[in-house]
Length: 92
Image (cartoon, rainbow, N blue to C red; front, side):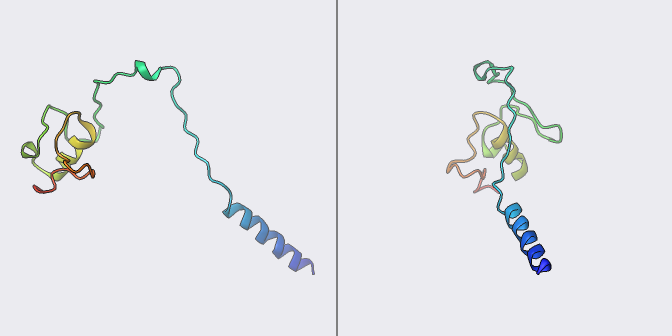
């Protein structure tokens, strides 16, 4: 009888653990107001071989990876006409 109660208790703990609501905490930098954030600054990831240099068209890209970098990181580009996140679909 004790074994059955122990098994039921363990199953209850497991069920509760597996069905807990998962929460994600995001810590925003509250020292800088959103309207004070620079809008023209472009940051380039350290691991990137590319940098935003003013190119905006698919005809100016040498690879899909380069076009994807420009699409994701550089302003005013015209490489995703259907806005699906895939740049230069006809070229690459």
